[in-house]
Amino acid sequence: MWVFVGDAHLFNTRFPSAKPDGLAPWVLYSGDQPLPTASVYLDLNGRYAFDRPDSAPSDAWWLVHAPEFTLAELPPQTIRLNGWPGFTNGPDWEVVAPNEAAESIASNVLTALGKQPVFVPDQLGGIGTRVLASIINEAYLLMGEGSASRTDIDLAMKLGTNYPMGPFEWSEQIGLPAIHSLLKRLSETDPRYTPAPALVEALQVL
Image (cartoon, rainbow, N blue to C red; front, top):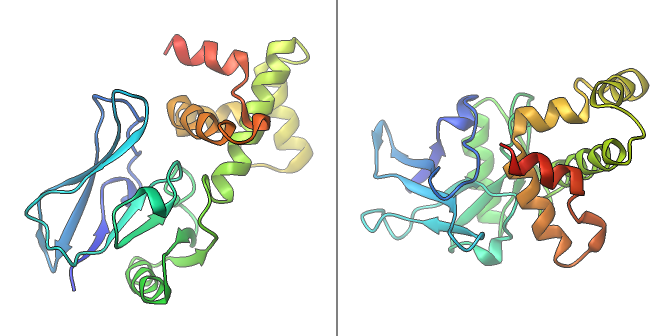
């Protein structure tokens, strides 16, 4: 069985911002022999695409960081992970698997990496990224209204909720392109997730 077991980001290197010229590599291994790179990237139409090399075995399973996807939008035999920076530091990883066989594969791979999978329903954003994107968006709404500064909002969230970082600090670590991309997709079916004007403005000056 060929199984993807990691790329640079899953070993605590930051996942590249989602841009047409910034492909994110996902490397498939058999033992210690890597296969050609597969990529998840934002295409020129502003939607994610999945590029699997023709030389990869047809029965390979792929574990990919893809919170902006559902499994229905990805090729067969794909398992989704939440790999935003900061989300893979702890022992538990959020995982979406299509069936029990895939859950077993994900469990074996993550256990080998010293991680514990937490299986969640197949929905855009999963749980952790969806909640955090909403908090960051709300912080940008507050700042845009002039209700508080970035510093005050970050401090209030850390002192009031015991968050390790404030929402603006989180947005800097994760990257606004990834946050905006998820919010935009979620807002297609729920206007609550419409990106805040201040967030869009901040994205334009990056």
